[in-house]
Length: 425
Figure: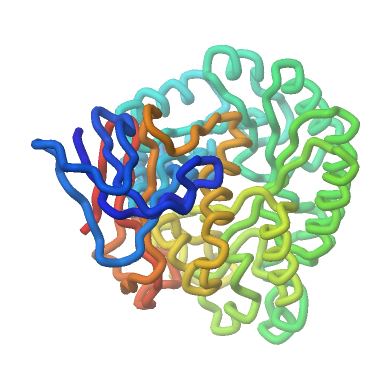
């Protein structure tokens, strides 16, 4: 591969070329030259834009569900990874939400072998407990030593038994791995479907209170502090959760946290028409929560922003709200949605850093500054192009995305990784 990218602005706070508009030449998978005006090599393909366009280190979507094996009617590894590239992602953290569950070495080997040649790097996440039952622990050491697993999670399900969670934390600490859980007490959430509040009362739907998240998060922080293990609070959703995480970090507790794009932008007002595509777990909360979450992203309290890609079959969404499956299949629209709602231009360097560098840290994956002589792992995007979200433009197998028919601002132009280039005209 020999590709010359003309007049592109480097958006990488770790790079000596940060915010410089340059030509960038990639040859055989390596950035061979960065200069204001590169004379095109004879066989190089030239890429240029009349807009202000950016290149950052390739992005990583930390928690995605690609459903294979077992639920290929929802998504496959092939369709999920193709969708990831169109979202700007050159890496994904793959949840073990499969059948059989990703709780053993053979399953991890299957994932690695099937995705080895793909442009997108896959960081498999192994289960904490066998078959997600919250009882018997997986073979942590084998999964770490032979499977290369750095992060364990029961597909972001909560662990109700605090003794069991403590044993998980203590066990993986011995070899430096981490634990991620969603923070939602099942005994407090019960059979709730949306945020507990005015909207749940208005619609007659059972609610999930904010304390269902916060009580369990407080417990998990205590356990993380006691064990000293790297703990990740996944997909937090309330202002009080932000306060708990901020306090824990100030105390030096080894904790990180993530939030979905949707919880930064939308409130429970979105479910007032019973649109099941807005049924998320955790549920969409209040304006006060979205404000606190966004501030926490900007000040570094929340480390990771992700799409929480959860593709669902049409039949599992076209039903009553109470019976509908959770989640949005939004890996292709996450960045554009955030840019449309938040006008990222003034803070694009920070957002790109979160998308690229921060999200890899929880998998203990290193990144390199965009500079000459390093392997090219790149995402090209702009902040001004508009595009309409239509089924024929999406590559995910599922269409449980409430943005269908909407026009978004900000476009992914292409990605480079592992000596491969995918470009989207």
